[in-house]
Amino acid sequence: MKTKGIILIIAFIFFSSCIVKSLQPFYTKDSLSFNEKLIGNWTDHKNGEWSIESIKTKFEEDKKEGLEISKEELTFLETYKEGYYIKYLSKEKEAGFIAMPFKINEHYFLDFIPIEIEDEEINSLAAQHLLKTHSVTKLDINSNKNVTFSWLSEERIKDLFEDQRIRLKHEKIGFQEDLLLTASSDELYAFLTQYTEADLFKKYDEKDRKWKSSDKLHLTKANAKP
Image (tube, rainbow, N blue to C red):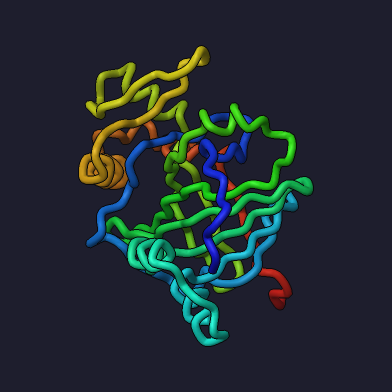
């Protein structure tokens, strides 16, 4: 999988509300957990199209075809070999992501990193101001042909900060004061563990408040038999 000529962008907006963004990954290396069931082509309930491939497998295929792999690409492979390369097409706009799979106890998550976007209208100076950030989605594998992505919503985390229930390093950036988490990966993983499992946040789990329903995508595998 060639990585040259990639434009780094701020976290892709899937929804009308905002997803939580972080400077650091939400996973730790020892929590990574690859799942073959996610590989394939999918369609979500908003008619978005998803192509999900193994990064390691893509590099192995390039090697078999005799394609030369640069030192930069080898470094990329070493960092992301346990992840997925995802292409997402929605309303004729395509974006590419790295998604790193990890587990918290029995729960699966994906750390999304935007790496490329097709947008010829973006101004070159504006592009220089864009920053690669991370977002996190809870992954529910309902069956071999149905999965659900549930993004961590900025609205939920702001509630926790306002109620002084969490202490995570963060900044409010830009004129819109978007929330940007600046905590370390260890701190983010510890927070997600507590957020997912602890009774401390029980009231935020009422009516699906932990993983807000409007920030969910339901994916069905392409050509899946009923």
